[in-house]
Image 1 (cartoon, rainbow, N blue to C red):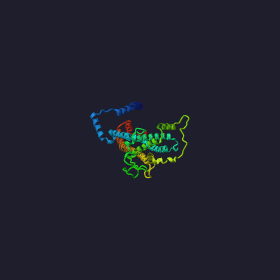
Image 2 (tube, rainbow, N blue to C red):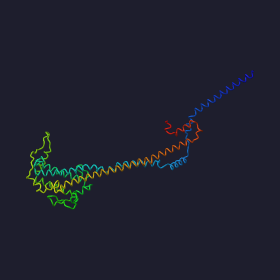
Image 3 (tube, one colour):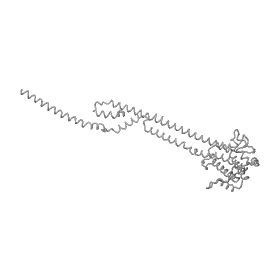
Image 4 (cartoon, one colour):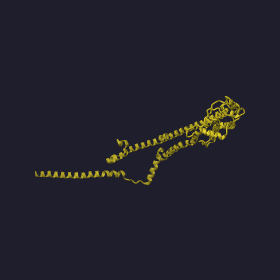
Length: 387
């Protein structure tokens, strides 16, 4: 009985000692594994492996040869350079016509003003001869007004033809062939159905021959000057009278008044007898029904020529702008985005799929769980990591 009792006590002691020993060794092993797990993972993850320089160059050469054309840096640089160049060209090329466009307004304005001044000179010449009060000015004031309008007509015509005055930078003589044909070609080409070689005879002046509208304008100048010389007053008195007519004092008193308005029928014959007045009236608004107002129609033809030039320049600018914009959109949308950017993104996606498949085929069962998670998280899609 005592022997069996001692055997039981020895067994229980041995069992307790072995259990305590096992528990102690197992706890130290577990704590050592927990302590070294992160260090081992980081060391294995970031451990540098020296690769020979020859191997590096060979790998780079192989990768460069297998790289697609649409993912190469020189291709992107070339496309971006072409886009920038086309963008600048779209701005600078239409800008070449900016001086012409800014010149169209003043030159068209002077063309219309020239027509108005011709009408004013014709009206004032008639009123200077008749002096019937319909101009609401006396004879001296009419003379001064006629001299001022004639000088304004000369300046406007000179600026329109030669430029560098009255806001006109480039005269029509240097760039508008249609205007030059009307102004300088022989004959009266502004008359519909007339050949240039025909004369410009009008009623009362059957022998008048004109070498273009400019010759008719010069005759108009001479006729107005002759009317002022024959039927006018002293030049100094006329200038003073017209200045007083235009002046407005501090008391806002008007210039000299002209109260008498009465048609001088006895002087109407002068309009036909005086060769200068006949030229002025018939070239502006007279002559035969077929050839009525040659100077008026010629100046209107010049004004139409400038309006045609304006429409043509603006239409060309709009066409060029549309073409350049279309080229830019083709380069950006079709070539850059469609052929280059999308292909690059698709190729990058395919490479990512291949890399993920390669990782999935790795024998991760030989690695620790933490190492497997590190590798998987590196190749995991963004949506998967955020979900």
